[in-house]
Amino acid sequence: MTVTVSARSGAFPQFQPVAGAAAAGTPPTHDVAVLGLGYVGLPTALALHATGHRVLGIDVDPDRLAAIGQRRVDLLHADLDRLDEALADRAAFELADEPARLAHAAAVLICVPTPVDPQLVPDLRVLRRACETVVAHAVPGQVLILTSTSYVGTTRELLAEPLAARGLRPGVDVFVAFSPERIDPGNDRPQSLVPRVLGGVTPQCAARAIGALKGYGPQLHEVSSAEAAEMTKLLENSFRAVNIAFANEIAEASRALGLDVREVIDAASTKPFGFMRFLPGPGAGGHCIPCDPYYLLWQLRAARLPMPVTEQAMSALAGRPRLVVDRIRTMLADAGLSLSRARVLVVGVTYKPDVEDLRESPALEIIESLRHSGATVSYHDPYVPRLSSAAGPLTGLATPSAADADLVLMHTLHTGADLSWLDGHPLVLDATYRLAPALGRVRL
Ligand SMILES: NC(=O)c1ccc[n+]([C@@H]2O[C@H](COP(=O)([O-])OP(=O)(O)OC[C@H]3O[C@@H](n4cnc5c(N)ncnc54)[C@H](O)[C@@H]3O)[C@@H](O)[C@H]2O)c1
Image (cartoon, rainbow, N blue to C red; front, side, top):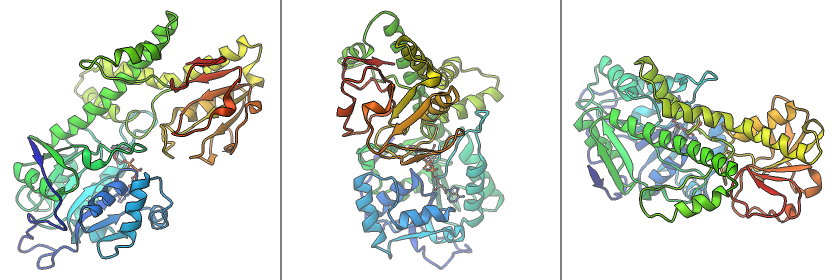
């Protein structure tokens, strides 16, 4: 069901504290508390504030809170403007590190990280702790919405059941739902234009949660359960992983057949139905694609249900940075140079354009491996002044020049990057598939 909702200043008509509640008699001081103010939580808090909600932002990391207060955060320009407005509006936008204050919010959005461990098993420690906190401070009448990507059943197991064990019945005393985030960092697409999926633990939970998100996004698409909403998010990100892996495979096939994969993908993209454009690249980074599909694979492994397409895609993506290093080695060898004595300059190291986020960036593994092979590696990325790596820290070149390197790897192409210095360089490996063809440029 798709529900169109409109903004209403500070409105929480559904919030009716239940008699006997911990916060009974005390009206909520905030419409929404956002727990976890990272890449997802902060823009979400700002969007809620911008649409008239009184917002309490809570984070356990004092450095993060200080950075937000000083505007030292990786946000789109529009969100930086919103941050200025929010910070100037103390009455309706507050930052705190005391989880006990959750009890004074009408609704709580949980936006904490859900990574995988080195064995690619979901690392649920942060999410479990955050949910325990929310359950411990929940008060009757509150709406609790989990937004962190996780396995199917998380909302019920980590929120609904412990709340019921505390005597707070979901759908009666408290209202529990899952509504995954679809934010796209670095892309100037207003969050309000992106529909949001939501599933409640009960129909009453869904109805209250829809009310809590009023004004935040123009469209809420309600599904029948929290589990359906959890699975929706896993489908979305597994779909992307599989298609990026497929685009990489088509790139390899085109290369073997002497074809330009960009020409082929651009041509296929003219089809107005049944085709969706994905570009190949050096691998997949960020907090979603390299992690989320493992939540599904892990859960289904317990049920002895293989997902060979997703599994293959994930291992192909994981192997992509190794292929980049192999290509660099071959290009240098063809030019009569040995990787162990070569100077390699990596341009763009974040996992995607126009963000500071380095999490799971393929560039990290590529740089590590190049240095391990004896190459002298430098990098240039205006978003990343310094990098730490097992082989020692690296400081980015502020102004790269062609003379700095025997080979240049284009890893991430930020908007507006001036690449004029690259013209005429004899060895450029383009892992972005976005550079215009030129002499010396080779697509990965
Ligand atoms: N980053 C993205 O592009 C993106 C997009 C869509 C969905 N998601 C999902 O959103 C969730 C959050 O991701 P993120 O990228 O914002 O993570 P993040 O690491 O950027 O931010 C998480 C924040 O939560 C804080 N935190 C951790 N435990 C806490 C606790 N118990 N109480 C209060 N604060 C706590 C951390 O200090 C940090 O500031 C993940 O599940 C992710 O998969 C991320």
